[in-house]
Image (cartoon, rainbow, N blue to C red):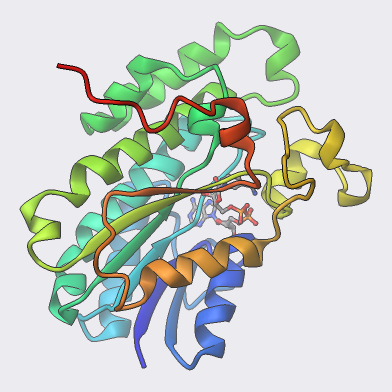
Length: 275
Ligand code: NAI
């Protein structure tokens, strides 16, 4: 049986993933702000370092997989916190845990991004670049500036939408850039991302209201399958990426979104290489 660290384990997709792995007999080290074996705030440098230390102590220094699922939504009032939690949190934690993944001989890392990275037309390129350059203070300041420049009719509903979509595009790019570096790829450690669509969790319902009031056919983005996702729909794919047999996929972004991205941008992906 394997040992996995799962962030965001107290709710939604993280809780569903932790439950699925535990039901299969694996050891799960849950990480969250509350109700977890490791309680830490992944939005701060200190919290990330504490979390990494506690995970390494609990695992004995070797991990079979890490599922970086903790995150916040576009309804969060503070866009700076969105950048710190959704981008800098998983990056720092995965970098700190990479040697423990390497030690297992077949480490697996999975990050939860979002289809908002490609379906929300409010991404700020500078915010993505600041994130990828590792400038957390710069990204936080830029996110606040961007929110202030956004029309009130948008920020009243989703105050941090630019930070949210930008943090999720940045994490997708970080996964693709990082997965293929020798430190990961040549050590047998795979790194992939899942881009969920609208999944019925407390995070999504914070922006949209009660599940009984939601109708897939009148949702603002197209929902070809006609249903919302459940946390278990995402946990299923996280579990697949965590398996030792999933050794030939790295740097991929898997859309698990009911077909939303394909409906909105059918030909945008894959894009052909140009000379
Ligand atoms: P959720 O709110 O049910 O669970 C998120 C968990 O992350 C919570 O337990 C929360 O306490 C934890 N968390 C938040 N900030 C944290 C911090 N600073 N330190 C440690 N833990 C923290 O939300 P859900 O929907 O399960 O979200 C999981 C991931 O999926 C997030 O990264 C989110 O951005 C992403 N996502 C969610 C979508 C949805 O429709 N629900 C769509 C696309 C992406």
